[in-house]
Image (cartoon, rainbow, N blue to C red; front, top):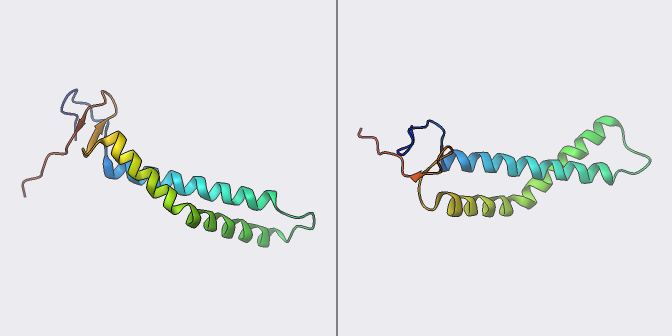
Length: 103
């Protein structure tokens, strides 16, 4: 797909932007959760495998508790960046709807 204004191929669809935002939100929540687990580790830390499993559990728990915030972030991105359109040109900033395929 190309931009309707500048013919650039650097076009981001709303669905692709949502997938990227969701991935980044999940990664951020997971990392924050694992960091909290690392900070709260006691001096008598468990075995390395148990510590890794605790970090994974805490990271996953953080993702589930932040899920609503991630979805709100995505809805805001769709509302304010795409303003109801389906495509955004990353070169010139044009907003437009993807052409309908005639199949």
